[in-house]
Length: 234
Image 1 (tube, one colour):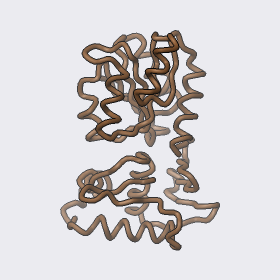
Image 2 (cartoon, helix red, strand yellow):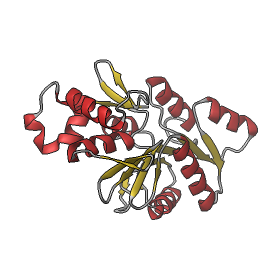
Image 3 (tube, one colour):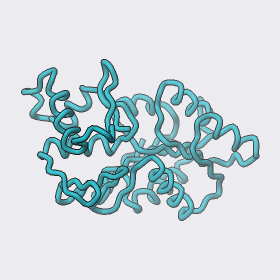
Image 4 (cartoon, one colour):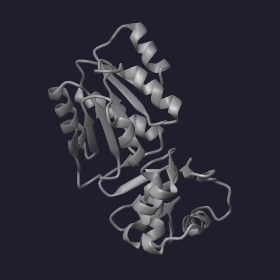
C-alpha cells in the first residue's frame, strides 16, 4: 500500500486498487501530479478497514484482482452501504464485461491500455457529478464554495461568517459528500487535541449552529442526521 499526498489539493482523496505494480505506480503519479491525494492497494485486502477510517471521494478499481474479482468487491461494498463513486479500469473489454461492471455498482468503465488525459477527464466528471470540484485554493460543493487558503465560505457569492471550528466541520463533510460520518470520526477530525473538553451534545450543538449559518431558512437541507451514528452531507 502506497501513500502520496499533494500539498496543493489534500482535500480530495482517491483510492486505486491495481495488482500490477507498474500500472499502480503510473496511476498514482498521474493523479498525484493533478493534485489529488492517492492511496494505492495491490489487492482488496485492507481496503474495507481503510474505508472505516478514511473517507475518499472516488475509487479506481481493476477487475483482475487476486482473491476477489473487482466487480464483486464493489458489489459487496455497495451492499454494505458504501456509495463512493467507482471507475473500473481493466483489460476486460467485452460488452458483457462492461455491462457487468455497471450492474455491480460501477459509475464509469475504462479499458486498458488507457489514456491518462481521458482518465483525468473522467475522474473530474465523476467528482463533479458527486458534487465535488477543486482547484489549488477552492473547494466547491453544490452552491457552497470553500476558500481553503483564506478559510472563507461563500454561497451565491455571499460570504458566510463561520468560526474556525465550524469551517473545519463543514470542510470535513465536503471532503466526504454523501457518506455518513460517525461521531467518533468527527470528534477526532474536527476537535482533535481539544476533544478532552468534548461532551455528548457537542457535535449536535456545533451542527445546529453550522446549519443555521449556511441555511438560515432551513430550505436547502444540506445535512441529514443518521440515527445513532452521526451525520451525512446530502
